[in-house]
Length: 169
Image (tube, rainbow, N blue to C red; front, side, top):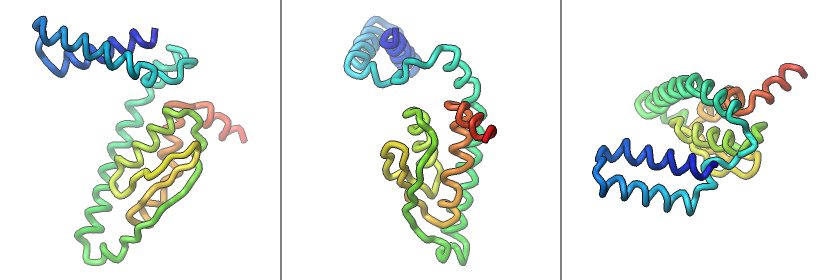
């Protein structure tokens, strides 16, 4: 079932991006989608115990997170711009490596968290080892909120049970 869904997603993406629907291009798309599905079809849907209903809930909560993330990227861009252009900006540049643990247990949620950190200017996820993150930050301010609001919002999308447990205790 999951490999069939992977094949359909890959072929759909191929068809949409190629824009050609002649026999050659569709055939090439089918071959490519089959090949990629055969060699890596298990990678896309690693957490197969999640029900379709839960996946739809995640999908419904995802746009809110993406809008918030886009806003954080804009704010971080202004921070990096300030560091580059303000007269005192270079004095605030204090590169550091920050190590912290996450409460996220889902590998995909951790992946989204790591990618979100890296997408935010001024921070780069250097290493993710189990529940431990190693992040390079350009300044104290950039390092300040790494394990906080972003992690909470990702938990809201992919692991809402973490937040329910936090409010109960």
